[in-house]
Image (tube, rainbow, N blue to C red):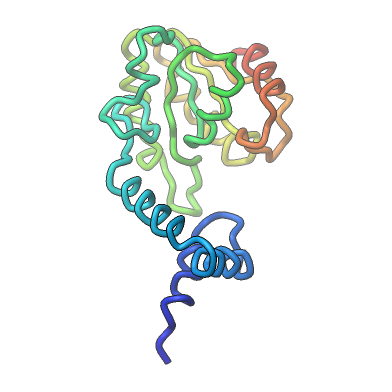
Length: 196
């Protein structure tokens, strides 16, 4: 028996994090029963974003242009590079208003079991970027096993370069993700960073 378009739409909503069967059903029925115009707008914006949003060629953050607004901003401190796991971490740090440098977004952590190695995280691009005018690399990675392994790998990768490698101070819970940390805790962690 062929699935109905409603069932297919419910399954499509389940690709979002935290959206289970009941939540997906609630969303689909809301759009179909009460907000078809909103559903059309949502579909259009999703298509636009999928077609137009790529990665900044300098920092790998999500961007509609070749170079993102942060990398292109002359007011930023281009000698500081904060390495984060994902774009949501950039948003969290930016909301703390405590950092004025640039970023490098790994789009994950080292995880051999999941097939994520240095190539997938852009480690060569990170090393290349650190060879020119970078004075400090701040590792702002989660305190998970994968985050620790990634931080260690990066510190070893950059050891031979004349770049200072620091790590944000603790205060972020073990296993915690930056996107869930409040701005004050994140600001304190950034200001209390120390060399590895």
